Length: 312
Image (tube, rainbow, N blue to C red; front, side, top):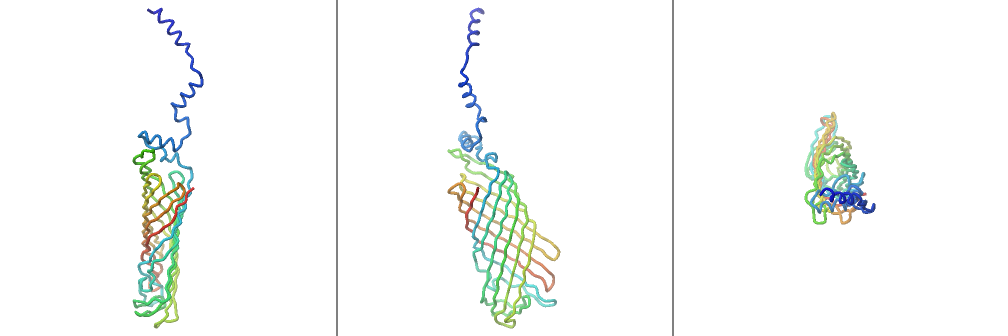
């Protein structure tokens, strides 16, 4: 019995496979031998595993994104202009000078994505004016005295610039479609930054006791900010994002507090170009000076925006 097995073992040890056959078999059994790609990730998703196309390893090392938009916003709240020592000053509603009418304002943000880190710079520039407003309140505004029914000319230039840093704390694909693409990718980012405001307000009396005189004031405010951003990307084509944050700047006789919220939606018919629409709401309380020389700019700026998204 042992003798009959000997020649069988000897013949088996002499079997040789062509080198080409061995190389093909190794490459087929070792996916790591190929460069990572989105196609490979989508195939994995079709097999029921997490699609590698959504991992940061498959994303470019750097991504640059521009989001220019037009913001149809209206100003609400009230303001107070600094006067002379000992004078009596009142707070006037923006509506008293017809400064609450909606108007288009430029709005935009630039994002640089580096792995899980995102660095952004953005802001807006809002201007409104009225040349023949019938004042609906009475009181002192800076060097001016108004009675209800007087006519005034006024303008407000209000701009903001903001710098932010965010870290992608959560980047989770949820569900896989038949073609292997993720059905939804959910993201969460804590955000910190700094925000700057510039306000320039001017009011002139056209009729009334102060006719022919004017008052003006410009100021600058600076505050650190912190917030959070949530987003969901559907089928690598539609994105919904929500970001909110607070800012506070207690710097001596200059104080500021703000809260902002932005809800946006983006549709990308092609990978690097999208159409964007959303709503932005900013609450602010800006103060400087003391007593009769105090300046206050307290209210909100809110409205819909439309724009585009371009990324590289």
